[in-house]
Length: 310
Image (cartoon, rainbow, N blue to C red; front, side, top):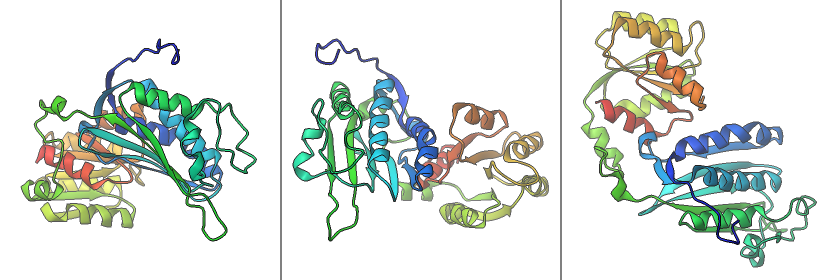
């Protein structure tokens, strides 16, 4: 279908943050089974990560790249993410695997061609994954390339990073009230001074969130359990913002949010959750939370959520 020009493109709104988080959840267990770590890095707030593209083709591209990274890596980590460029998003899949010889880095995108790496895994597969990914990227108006350093006697594995771009036209974002290119420093100065309750049982996570919000906090309160969070809010009804972890002892974040919502319809509750499936997000909202941010906490995403309400 690609060769004959019959491949159809179904453009629709797609949230790239959600797609990357879905890929992360799909492959995390497989990566950790090999003793490696899988990370993702979403740099845009959720509401600004919407693009017009073919969702299924983007999923296929990312899946192919992550599968290759798993296949050719034995130690270290794999990272999925993107950065915003002037008129595109530059997505990447980075690994700490065996690398690709420089003279083979263009050939691997050709049909039925593999890297001829001296590795027992190199002969598995038909050599079509990268070729199809390249065709999909080009159909969607982008380009794909790889940067890699092959392992040598004098160096450790430096692995490969596959990049591809997708159009991100800023002119299509005019209807949003918040600029696409956010200036975090400006936002922090613009946010009113808030009384904030951080509900987090992990001390390190609580300290991190406290640092992220300290510039616009007039007072920070901390609860270690859901039950304690409800009690603190009951005694401090002037709290402006609650940053609610979902996994808590005694009473989880869902129930704590429901009970706090009975006390006030006005307080803003932003859930902090490692869950990224659609059903879990729906559960967060149904519990009474106004919004959610994914763990690990991204400063730009968190500030963007808070700025939306304050």
